[in-house]
Image (cartoon, rainbow, N blue to C red):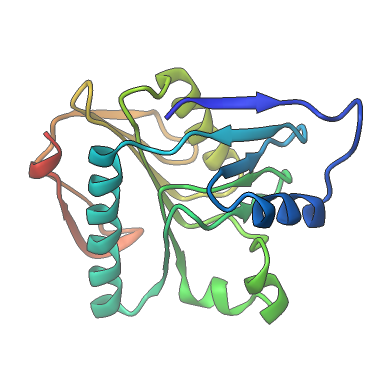
Length: 191
């Protein structure tokens, strides 16, 4: 999933409402916006990546239904991070009390909140350095735990604020009791 970045700042400053209108007018295109106001056009994933992402999201939904600890979001949800970027992780999760603190209007638009957890599943065409920069951006904006899954290199990078990056080679499962209690994510099918 190759991303293209366009800078319209010399022509127009894109507001959240402009961004929302652009998204509604182009429902088949996935957009994000950087902290500098640049528009990021993200190409759709291929079939394999889309299927894996759907399975991963389903695993989180099933876990969350049992755990009843928060809210799970798919890759079409765009979050307004504290530094004003609008980002859409492949899987995101927010603790229930943090979600409940938002107003109904905030929940309807681009929620102004950093998820507690994000997962990014790289497509074969994704650039690793771009994906890593996005994960660091999540951490800098209050995300507590991030998993970057790279099927091509058979690795998982684990991001936590103020901690060294942890890299695992083809793990069979992933878990983190502190952030995602009782979740054990089976990754056998990815490798």
